[in-house]
Image (cartoon, rainbow, N blue to C red; front, side, top):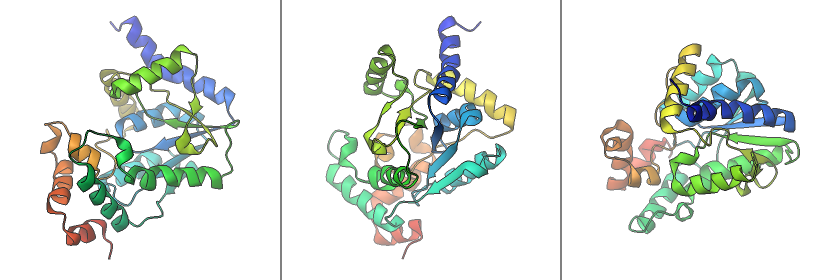
Length: 253
């Protein structure tokens, strides 16, 4: 029998989405093709006005293919937008190497890495501005869960306790509000929910997403993740530091 707490956590995302649909004229999903993001896609599709995917040029080929498969399987191509960073893949790869060499002996601080801003956040900011979105009418949905980190959990609980189901986010240049409807889902609940919904629409479960040579993933991968092909790609990149590898991996000249 499912506990009362689990039942509440499972129903909460839809309650939040229905509330946001009444509150805002436009709901935009920031989609990555990952597990959290795909669960939010499946839950929010009746409420969405747009789906934005940031293709950094360094994504795993399987990730890009899965994103397109999910969009087409759900019949959402008409509201799908794919963004690209201003920097070329080789320029991003060079930046990743520089930041990794400079910070690999320091404790983790996301602000030490410029790649997330240039590859993902800046293109989103520019798109929000081009579309002339504003915080009164637009809310961007993100598949973020509080249980991924203790810091995120504490900040999330403060938002929830004060009754805030959406908030400002500097990464979106304060031109839109941001909401995380999956905030209180645990890992176990996420997987059971995702497996059920993917099965219903005949969509395979997603695997790892993000830049294949992400320095944060490489530094903090769990022991079991270090045996995967994804990790081996990153390992070759960071251990060799070869210019030819950057060229061959990114397809740039």
